[in-house]
Length: 81
Figure 1 (cartoon, rainbow, N blue to C red):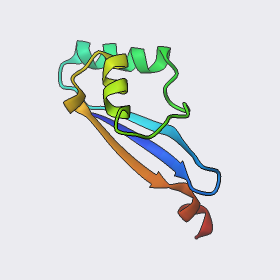
Figure 2 (figure 1 turned 120 degrees about the vertical axis):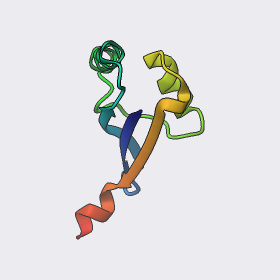
Figure 3 (figure 1 turned 45 degrees about the vertical axis):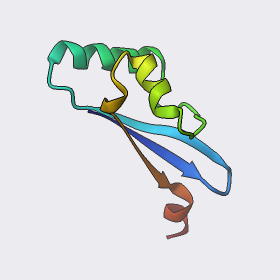
């Protein structure tokens, strides 16, 4: 599984990749995916959050879209606490 954590700001109207957690069992595949994440500088990247995002990320990483899990959290809610 590749868990993509995305920050969302309603006030500033953006989505940005905050963290990517790779939990693929095969060591070589995990290393390959982590290398692509680093080479493409995905963490910190602003993204368009739509129905194509999981497939676009899967294509970029060369994995099956079923491995991609996306979770968003509202950062404005955190800032208000």
